[in-house]
Amino acid sequence: MRKLFVGISKMWGVSGVPGEFKMGAAMQSVNSFSNAWLCVEEGVIAGLGGEEGFFGPESLALEVNQFMESLYVGRTIETPNPIHAESDMQFEIVDLGGVELLPGFVDSHTHLVFAAPRWKEFVMRIGGESYETIAAAGGGILNSANALQAMDEDALFGQAATRLQLMIAHGTTTVEIKSGYGLTMEAELKMLRVIRRLKLAFPIIIQSTFLGAHAIPLEYKEQSDLYVDLVINEMLPQVVAEGLADYIDVFCDRGFFSPAQTDRILKAAKAVGLPSKIHANELGLTGGVEVAVANGSLSADHLEYCGSHEMDILRNSFGSEGGGTMPVALPGTSYFLGIPYAPGRAMIDAGLPLALASDFNPGSSPILSLQTIWALACTQMKLLPGEALNAITCNAARALRLENNVGMLALGMRADFFTTDSPNAINTIPYFLGYNHCKQVFVLGNLQ
Image (tube, rainbow, N blue to C red; front, side, top):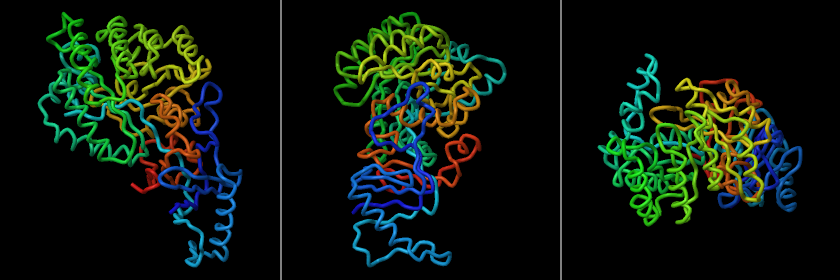
């Protein structure tokens, strides 16, 4: 039976065309319906409408309007939700009671699976140590790798499932999760198998990324090319053989993997059909953008350092249909590490699209709520609230090439959304920072 969601004072992020994402000045635009309704059938959106119009078959809109008239005739304060049992309309009615409704968030860059927090390094940074200094001394990613290698798969899964449930409660209904805290064949496969278990255990979309080239293990510190050989010749074939990854990623930056090494890995992945995403320019103008675009990477993430040259390269990548390397900014990392923020305002003003993600991880961004990322993008990167909402919905979906399935409310797309009591939600959610604005979260039209 179709579900008809009513009692929606405002519905944000609506579109008549699935698969949209926003670039430049268009990122300010967030379409909405007032006094809206949403029809869901078999987990996807069959129709939606409001005072401003509707998207969907005219027959459905007529049926809904007729039913709405019968549903609310005689409404009084004493009987706020009359439902006529004798109606022959084939709807299961879900009256949401006057809330606002938004598409579920898409988090396109996370490190959700890890063994332990790194609070000791947090204290060290407060005392003046830099992220790079800590990493060079065996801390950072290598610290997480040691802890993960020692933890069994069931324990990793249990911890990750708890974190993922919290993410969903904060409105995230699509998430990408990377490996990269293994750095050995066995441990990387263990992480990816945990992600596979999460995919089976949760109804949301979960995408997995093989990030064996996240850091150079200490034993390869003076022979980093040998570790690249291990990633390409041993890890990658096994990951592909077991079908454990949707994408590959490389940390291309100073002190990690060079553009030449990154290029080798991305070309090897492309040869076996694995799309790429990369960490780029977190610590400097180190060539990550150039190598990402040259290899047709779906996204270049971090970009704390990104000048006009890099912006031109990224913008030019969107010249062909279906192409484009999406810039993804991670303001949680900048906030937590005290490093520059990606120049998101300049990127949008230059005509680029922009996505935002949490980079949720134990060392540099222990922030799992995209509501917080939304607020940081507004206050620290000077994005308008509507621009930032598009960056964590339709543009983030584009960074995963899922824009035809999630990221907006349109016909045929998944019915993944959340409700809120916050009036004028696209402005008040990032304004009132520090608590969860989600009232209810729905995945495939089902309450979570």
